[in-house]
Length: 327
View 1: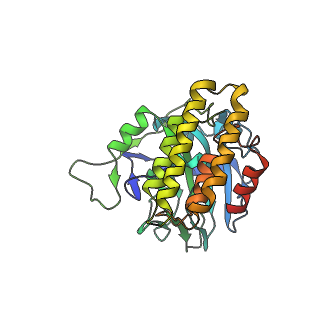
View 2 (view 1 turned 135 degrees about the horizontal axis):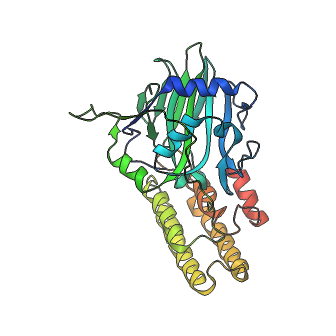
View 3 (view 1 turned 90 degrees about the horizontal axis):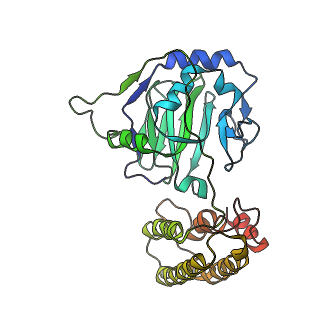
């Protein structure tokens, strides 16, 4: 999700030693290689589709995994966020390794915040986002702008372990964000994170059950286009691209009021979407966003792949090729 600042510290703090002890008790068996195979990166699934740690899907009913259910204080950390939780993990970065520079551009990331709670770390671990660099201390709670280019460098010998929670938020969560502290601001008088003391028992917290639309509503479609055009750098093809997108959005709205998300309308939606992709491909070539991603690439991964057909499996072959060729 795009934020106004690169990093924001939330007014919560946690007992990192207690969290580390719970994780240590799990042993090495639940840890898995990073899905993209990044050297020195491994993960331990905590919330996954159907609670299955082997299921890396972004869609489906999210549930705590068996490993999380063995960690009472860790569940209490989840509950303290006041958020509806999506896919979440422990992320381990070995010594002298890094998370390479990238921006999160897919549909999943457009509306989700990524919460970081450092559990095992060192002062030399650097988290870069945009033009800002910080060290997140053990037990702190941070969110950051995943839409900007970012990377993490661990130049120490020891591994770094963070709790990483993906969430669309919730009423309580956004109240925490409103009371947060930007990384560049000194703590104002009286600002201090509230410690969460461990207590007995496993805590319950809400998880996602709805995450991808069967058909994207015209209001969501316009919100995504708003982001893509607000972040587009000046380019000769920008005006034509915007006009094509506006015509497509109006066509989509008409279809929505005719069909809603009923299956009978899917063919009409797919035809309108394919016509838009074919028309916008040429004028949008060369348009780049502030985060260095090409406009067409971002549009395909945020809008086109998920506008109709649920998880993208029902996308037309042309759509699937376009996503693969430009990802």
